Figure 1 (cartoon, rainbow, N blue to C red):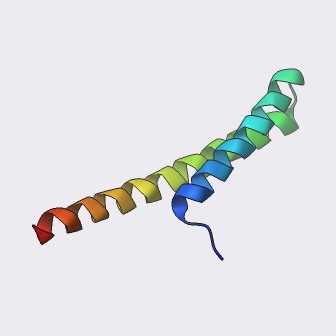
Figure 2 (figure 1 turned 60 degrees about the vertical axis):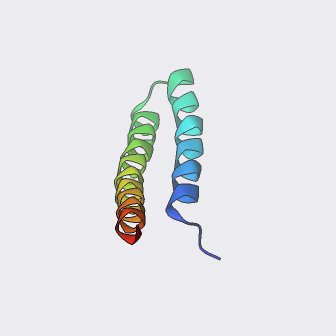
Length: 64
């Protein structure tokens, strides 16, 4: 079963949290890149979730 966007976003944040801890402990190019990569993924998923929420809201309003 595939995760929905909300679940993917939650997992992406948890991965970012781990990578950020590594970055704070050991400042290096590798940890810098990894934490920024996670942030880009969070941004991408956030945009998808915003669209999903907006579409759901518009559908509900139009149904009334």
